[in-house]
Image 1 (tube, rainbow, N blue to C red):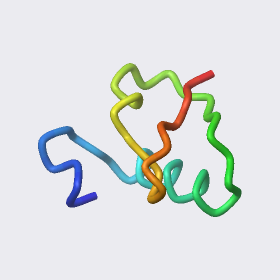
Image 2 (cartoon, rainbow, N blue to C red):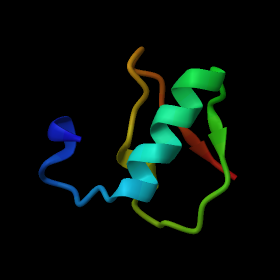
Image 3 (cartoon, rainbow, N blue to C red):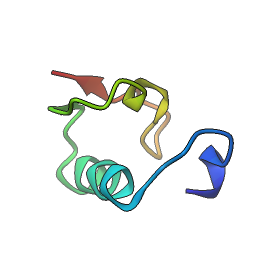
Image 4 (cartoon, rainbow, N blue to C red):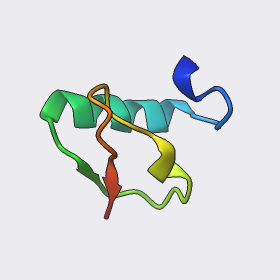
Length: 49
């Protein structure tokens, strides 16, 4: 979360990023319009569905 201190990241966003990293999944369904800025630890963009 500290990497994104300029962009508000709440617990739900952090949970989705952590889950994506754990499952090695790069597609996440979310209605959050600014979710595109988050990256996984390997610098891969998480794609919104």
